[in-house]
Image 1 (cartoon, helix red, strand yellow):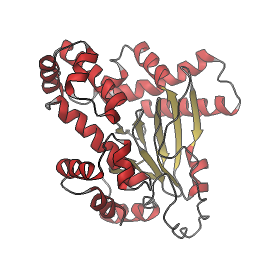
Image 2: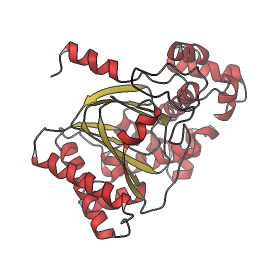
Image 3: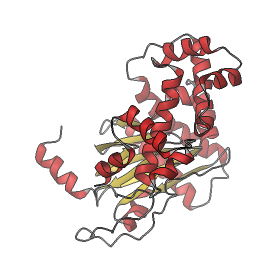
Image 4: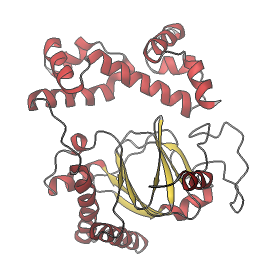
Length: 327
């Protein structure tokens, strides 16, 4: 376990989060000693969306790319891509939406689609980033006879690996081979690509299964709730009523309520409101859009109505939330 002194040294090496997120609207801070000043734009798509084909896969040495950007990638998200960051040496920080976690090598970080995330690495860290199309990820997890990807990884995960273990050695080798394939443009050799990807996902699944099992609702309720969550992801800006969701799902409001309470411990309306609030928080932090415009984009006709909704669900007004988080 790290001491307070080592944690302080590690924190000093990791750049603090950019205030403006995906768009540089705040003055850039001075670079740390020995580092070049960060360019004005991030190398990845900022808070927005990307798409990829069914079999898209790519590995890069993130530590080589990120050093050009003051060892930090600004907040961004991907519509249909999974990302798996393997930290082989050094320390880093990953921020998921409103949560930030520090970690030391060896570690593996999994980021599902649509999660806003930010990477920061210590100046001598060595890290590899694997990006997989959502469909390809699902295909590979099915080949490993694992549960559906969206059930197994509903949110981001940080796995702390065991130094010197056989699994770690296999994982490091798989990432190295994948990187060499990328550099040599050998991704057309699909059997070799899939074999190494299966090694990586096998390590992820091994650590995921090591956690105590979580009691699950009945399969019927789970399936209905999963369909509901996917529909919420598509329709939340339109401010659908619960009745509209039930109708689109071919069920009754009563059945949808039962499934939602059984699986998530909350009503369907609460699930919808949580998603709207999360998107509002993301846009308040990661864009420079006025509060009123954010409200309009989320289906509110009146800025005052949006402010009341946000306050009722978070305990503070949108402008106060932005000031508190951004300073």
